[in-house]
Length: 262
Image (tube, rainbow, N blue to C red; front, side, top):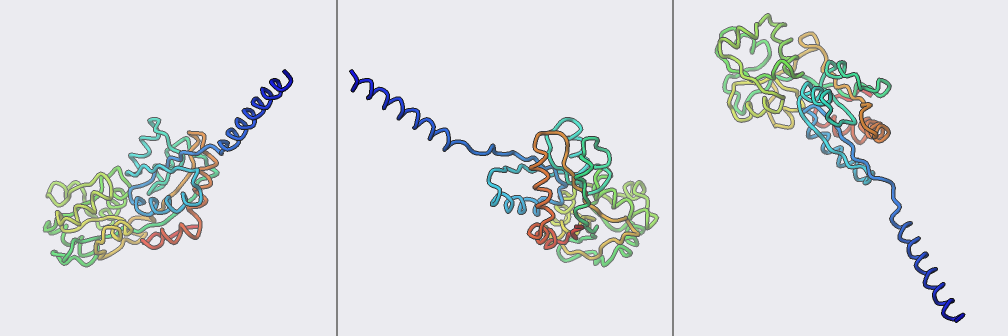
């Protein structure tokens, strides 16, 4: 009888021990699903940086949503989950009430560029030259919609040259893209004579840049970033934002033409 009880106790202790081992082996920190909304012009750089970050932070899964900053702002306002927002201009960020103000930072600066398709058939060499062509109504140009940052910067350039978008549109000089990638595509495929995009997108699309706009023409092109007080991933989002300011991330940004501001 004693031997039987001893055997039963041994089996029980073995099961408890095995259960305890299984429990300990499976205790890991909870994985984090980080959602980042970012301007379309950051597609290539952030995708690469996200992969770099994941190598040293395997418990963090980053999901990117790239679109025009205005569209992203609307999605956030309508309840789309977003932990970190990186805009191509200040306005979309300014109009969000869920931004954690102590995390907001001016992350990058870009340039607005005049690009032409391969061969530059109209032989455009500058914004001044572009203005002459537009006045002569002998050019077809792709620009961003007015509700996206690259379109807003373009309208400022037209104002600088005292050109009316409405008049140019009526003359058939303009075609539009809902984000900067759509504009670069139209130029790459030679659907237009030229386009106005960011110089980083010109680099990514291997387009020829014939001129870049000065601050006097359209202001500075600043990309603010901020963690949003929407989900439960505030600390992981802050950590990824800090990584975006690291030397490793900076090298990726600068390689395509961004200027880092930290």
